[in-house]
Image 1 (cartoon, protein in one colour):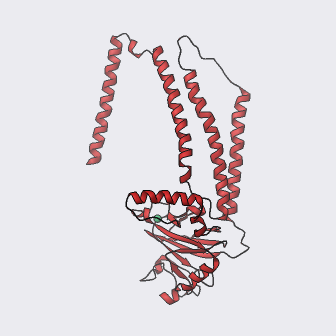
Image 2 (cartoon, helix red, strand yellow; image 1 turned 180 degrees about the vertical axis):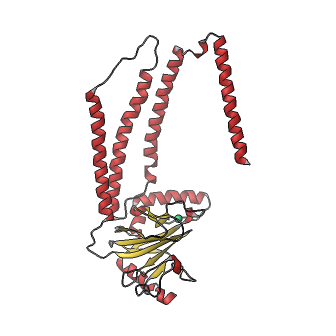
Image 3 (cartoon, protein in one colour; image 1 turned 120 degrees about the vertical axis):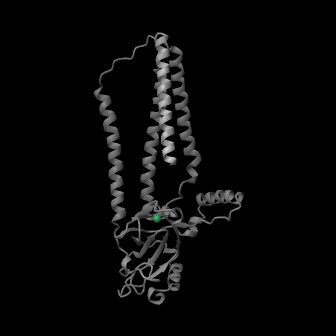
Length: 341
Ligand SMILES: [Cu+2]
């Protein structure tokens, strides 16, 4: 009903505008068409407005760059993340240089060449040299960025495995993550949604010899400096495992296993003491204190980055990067599936 009312209101508004325009046209004709003439004053006003709006626009973009740069992600906590960051920074740098040259010129020219009585536009047909420059230069810059990007992507998705990565499954469902570690054999037992039953919430095939030493966890622990290979599954809809601090993201698609491998290089403890992070957390906690909320501690997270349903916003799991000893100790404390089920 609401939708119908909104549609009727929009329709009536359009009819009103059309009728008012018709009245203006008619009254213009009565005045001998003079109402629609553009006067010198109009041109001056339009030109000046272009200059002022353009100036405010460029200044506001610059202010946003400066003012919000400290709410960006901290330095990358993974090895490949450094490559992604430099690709991103170079792209942003090039885009910004072009933006801050082209936009002021565009708005200034709109002002400079505004309508002036008696002034005629120059008839300028073609210039091969200009055409060549503004085609070849952007094409070459884009080629460099695209080839660099493809190479980076290739390196990230095909890591050379001198050392065996730790295999961890990340299981997505509305609206939770569960991690399944592959245990001592570093091989995940077979799992399928059809095998979900009772406390076997991930559908692990317990008759598979690789399954017994697997264990599930509601926290991801990772040893620093060791590669980890995440295998993603989804129970229901498409989710996306987003680990922003590690510059990692992969879709979790029902019916298939996707994967992403990376090497964490900064422990949770080290990152929480990074000056950039300390400043951000202090600011967040000042706001939280004002609202009477509990203070927030820094921690790596995996978030869902696909809008997968009503509680999507809260689909997260902590990631703790720690020393190898601390990691081994944590692993020993976990109950294997053979013991738990
Ligand atoms: Cu989700």
